[in-house]
Image 1 (cartoon, rainbow, N blue to C red):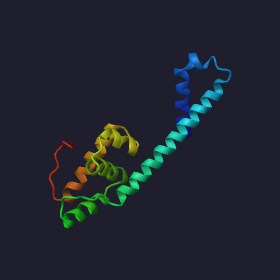
Image 2: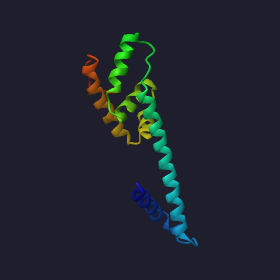
Image 3: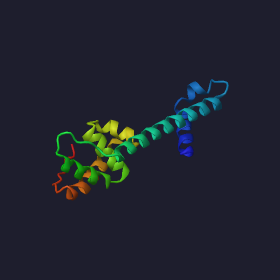
Length: 135
């Protein structure tokens, strides 16, 4: 991750070189950018871990009977952590995929893939039929 952050900082340096090259200490600018990127990444990871933990505690369905609710909770708990988080955030918290992807730490297209795989896994467990339309 440190290598990625360093590369991103130097990529920003390249993008802003005309302005930064006039600074007395361009190296300090790069260091500051790298630190900000690192702090941002840590905050994003902490958020992702928090949501994954909350997803692991089990979703609550309001309009289903208790037996169905427990079946869904048990089935969702069998999913890998990212798929479990995506299902919980997208369906139960009704968040848009762009926000779900940001929380989970992936691109929206990858979020849709996680959601599709989760639905494929959940369908036989819940005796449901799955269509390709995950929205």
